[in-house]
Length: 282
Image 1: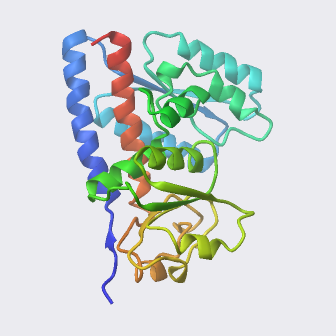
Image 2 (image 1 turned 90 degrees about the horizontal axis):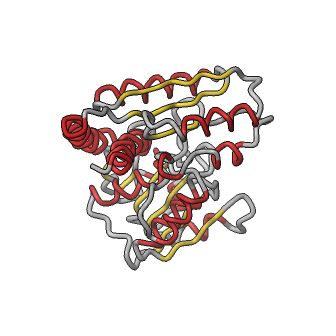
């Protein structure tokens, strides 16, 4: 039986970043202003520190200035909100990313809402979710947005297809479903209380795994020929899909790592340059 083709997020993301670098250079040449992404990190979670450093390096390669704002782990919600509001009013900053997790003592939603919608290049605010849901101009959540770009790169049209999203987080599962619905897919959301998850997933032409549980979805849970987008990233470089069995049944599948992850950063950088262009009126 033929194995699924891998959806190479690294290669697709590279093309997006190359185009973004051209747009950034042209914008800087026209305006004399370099697009700037501010990344706010609370505490010193090793994975978050590494991720922020990676984003800074990618930003630099794309011609985007990077401002790192490191706050102590004991930072309160009020203190974090004040920092984000200050960045929101700083004309030299065009995009803001709040790296999560931020610590259980912080009201993450209050922090997200302190980000001005025009600088919400990670697509985490109520305003961004609304524009995604209504198909209006705005910024998409980066990981779901990256998934849709992968589908486009591999000529997968969601229109008329059954899509099952496993996970309902505010910045991953829910917006993924909204973006697929906007592309005329018939969308079902699943979660920890879904009865007979395997039976629901087996009906899907497109499966989005975004629940944070390693190898939850197995090959036998898939409809033959399904397209599988695995947004899970668990300890040991393991996704939410059992790759070894899923690759025998799917037609297209994202590897972990190298699938959805690079696309997330590519969309973030692209949206930062777009945000700068809008703010500069260029």
